[in-house]
Image (tube, rainbow, N blue to C red; front, side, top):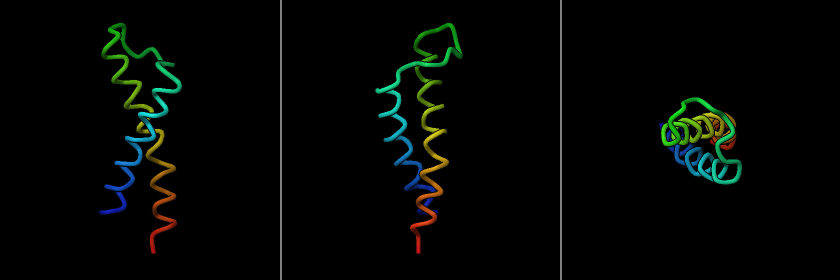
Length: 60
């Protein structure tokens, strides 16, 4: 459970950094605010998978 929580927190941090660096690359919604939220959620989702694997590998 702690590994999932740690992975989620790190994914939010790294997803936010990725969103700041890359910006809105995908057009999910014509509304700009909703599109920013969906892009951020996608970056967090993409970051979660490798971070979760890394956390599980390093866990004793």
